[in-house]
Image (tube, rainbow over the protein chains, first blue to last red):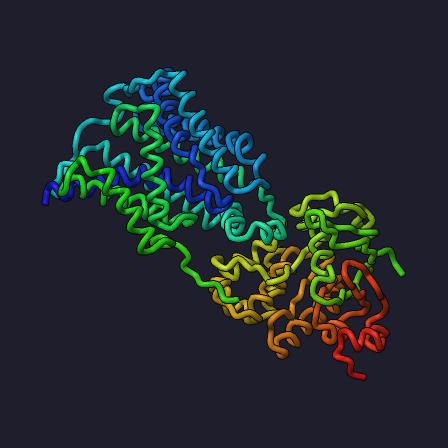
Length: 301
Length: 241
């Protein structure tokens, strides 16, 4: 039982990270009907920028741990969000009228570019986060010893998801994003500037992905320039699992995938961890291609 | 006659290399209901879509309140005062009725004014108020049409473009919707440009009409005169005297 709950909470923490990345895939897909294959690499950039900012400003020493890491997260999100906006301008907007495949190839090219840029800037070896940024101890939760880091990572991702959900559901711009995802032409007839919506989506998605990169650095203590590939694929799986284009779906899919993977690794074999995740992808594509929350409403015509 | 609020001169639109509109001229004056009649593929919807900016004209001019509007991007034409209820309704199916209506007021900042417009639309189409928290995709076709019109009205437009509001609806619903359009026109003086295949209903509602054939205006006159025209009768009104 102890092991089960340890793995469950670990799975939720990792799943929260997957969910944050998955949101970027799903939001971009929702509005553009494009899989941004460079998204995983923006996530990696978040991990690296976090490390650089951490070691150069030492905010955690100046402002205290929570405020320091909070400001750090905002800086990372702002920078990676800006990269997302620039990526869309450079790699996708010129191809708006081109066949879908051109944009996919452009996305793959952007992915290679971003990944190799990191390697050239930082080198190919693992980059290690300084020790002891977040509190190292464990706390007792219902008799379980849970590492504080794990709780903080899960909380951080849940808070960001909640803020995003409220933003998309309750604000005018959020409603405009949902409208543009349903029907861009009709959205323009409402006076919505679809280009602006696309820019906002490419700001928010990568910002969340970048924050996930920072969380990975803080949680595991190291980052690597290729880590965006596996995390990207997992998060993509999570987005499909929840129903691509569906924002709550990405959240549920991410958390679920994290838990399934953690439990599978614990009870089957750790070597099968990645295989389990991708078996989930294959299963969902066979059994329920629209995902868990996809296409809830049948349109009457 | 006062200055036209909306004027189109020699409008040409191409789909790829194929020209769909071969130089359309029309004018709509403030407070009028003007209808464009014509068969499938005559270019009626293309004309409306060019006016709202969803299509770029290849030549010609669209003037709104005396100023050129064809160079203005679609999303800014709403702010000028042009709102469209598109063909096929195109409501946002996974959004609620109320969210759909508020999106219609996307360009507006005046909160009390928006609340007034919402109340106005609810008075015009009470069923929308009953169903305000329902997802738009679950509405019946007639209700979706009311929503599409209500949504366009929420922009508080100077000109309302209606593309085939009767499409696929039962006669009773068509009557109700056309009645609502007349009511808005009479109470607020809203200018309406209506594209319809249901020529009989459209000519009853409109003050003036244009008849389109394969991308050209072939006839324009008062609605009464058009309804009495033998050519129009045989082509669009089922040939009845």
